[in-house]
Length: 475
Image (cartoon, rainbow, N blue to C red; front, side):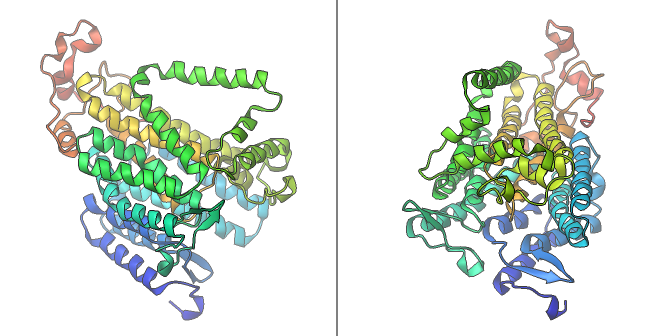
């Protein structure tokens, strides 16, 4: 690597990234996510290598090792493309093409390829490494102990206004209204706090599944990280996660809930003197929060629709004061790639929510509620991310958490979603033991008498389904 191509980087950070990369190459697949989660939790992305004009933060260096691993071990061959995968591929294509048409420069084309390299690269790495239910629950278990040191470091930063990650390239906390907003290894407190908030459902699922120790560690760490960030956005994401988890008893009535939310928004629009998105302005937990800005940027985006809908826009600063900073992931997608890219991004989220719902319906019997709740937790985490999108657009290593979640939902849909030709639904043949082991408890058993149900859908029973498996990926 020629020295003239090397940009500003931290030798300790580079050494840590290379160590995690080597571990990623050699350890068994079931633990392959450990180096990725460790780097996300502890390594700031402020330092990077510049090689032949290409920008390589530490997380991208780790991605190279991940690509090498799945190619050398032929782990990528385990992926069978489903509806979520295809939506992501179409979104990636649109993001590159539309952004390139907007700028028409080689530099911006390379920039957009780097963006897609991060998103799609890690998504398909996770799809290659997370292939069964054991892998999904193992993500919960691995993440919990890793966020504990992060939470303690951010608590110290919140109290002392000193970032313990400074030696690795971290940034000192911003102090607003006398409150130190802890960043940890992240670039911005909104990103650090949202990272902890969106992980809460994972740890609640761990608790529900019987792993009380790691569940408690994770829940406590999530709370600490969220509050230590001192930002309203992460607190709203945390409350969104709690709200979504609390809707578990209403899981069979979500259609009514969704329509109720739509009717509520219509009602608000009818009684408000301004568009409904200005209601966000009144949601601020911390003094000095950015709730006004969140409403303002939506308002200006709608007012300047002609400027960006086709292929995006080069400059949003002319839309209004402070709008050079697009702190909304949905709007960011539109600004960078036009309406088509934005709609494809929304389609990814829609398909992920749909996959969670289909998986829940496929797991019908009541003795599978532990698995169902873990799936519900995945949907709850996604809902927390969606709420986060209204206050921040992801950068630094924050995107890794999102695409890992999307990959987990995609894999779960391939495991649980039953084909339309099947009369009933259950755990796939040979799958019950693996589920039981993953939950750290007893084995889920098929009910040999399940066929005694009154309805024809139940008459086939789980044992019959085990003999005639009809499980197919969600397409």
